[in-house]
Image 1 (cartoon, rainbow, N blue to C red):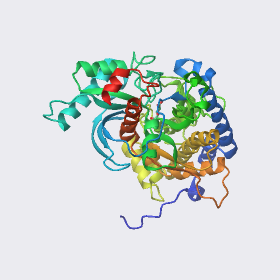
Image 2 (spheres, protein in one colour):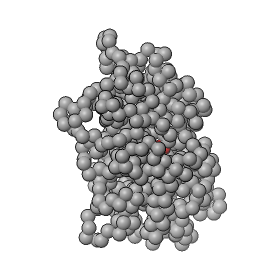
Image 3 (cartoon, rainbow, N blue to C red):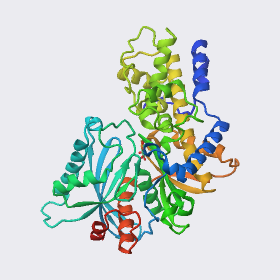
Image 4 (tube, rainbow, N blue to C red):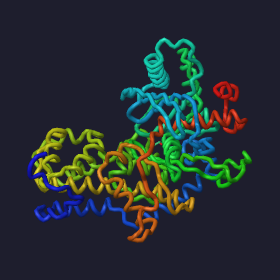
Length: 496
Ligand code: BGC
């Protein structure tokens, strides 16, 4: 460590005295734009509670397929810890692709995991459906060849397929993609079942694998976290996208009343709350949020996600800087070539994390970052402003994120619980957890002396272990004769 390295501080407002008045005014403008106070947070939560209820209602269940939130996942219980067996899991996240083999139950609540990661090529995200399914199948094939070399008689390996996009599931082994999110834009997939065409490719390739469950990453997170922590009630992702899942009682889900399930049957619901407030009733959107939405592959969708998720935070920051450059000439970066900064999505969330993590009073690391990433030489006051802007964007994301969790707690009258959380923003963005916890404290009116009653904790591996557990839970109930929400009865029985 270098000598003279100062202690890390959470806020640098103290050094603002050296910032010229016009930049201070700019900072004030940003503060007004990005600060979400407690009153607003509470309004957002109340609106979100209403959205949760609407999504479960018959009317909510009937709205256009592409708009449906609150997806029934056909997961009807938490794991007991006694689940057993070997399962494959395929995780198609926003950035990487992961194949795992999970052996459950050597001891209660235990598991062994073998995994391989593959890059998800950028061009695949805007390519063809055949290209996507073919690539996923190739990765599975490579995994099997590598880890099961020379094993001749493999057959019917059950797969939990974590597909982290909004899907309407009539069955657990089925799912119609409502719309792509997180920048994906592959033709011919939206509005169709994703399981059948993928299965077809697996069969054609002669792979000994059968899809036992299509799983959302949040449901996987909920179930995996509950496997090791009985206080878990909610599973969340704060990453490239945002979303949560929780257990609802069947009796509180009017849109599945026709199934006549006992009212106290637990049903895991994938909220898809990244799409909340698509009607723009309550979220305090800035001009930068509007631009992000307008220029995205799916304008009008994922309003909440576009203000809080990792895919967008760097872009919000970039748009704010470009706004000053274009509309307040000479205020920042005078005489600098800003062409790199003009490139959409040229800054990702790690750029903001790095700024917020800069330990030096003189923001030396931030200065270097601007120089190396953007070829921009900065002045000290400019750095101070950038630092404050990053802090504001990161804080807004954390505070808004808390609203989703708080809404589920309010809807379910949960006073205290654990929340399992995963995702790059939760795991890597500085102060995200503390800022979110502070917002929850304000929203849920905890007294100063009270510890965090709703505690957001780092989750177990939802897309690996969670998907395997969901496959195991499904096969277990099929074996017991419960075929609710199962499409291919014969196939599923053959897997048990
Ligand atoms: C998707 C969700 C997913 C979330 C986190 C969102 O864009 O719509 O299905 O759970 O990202 O990965």
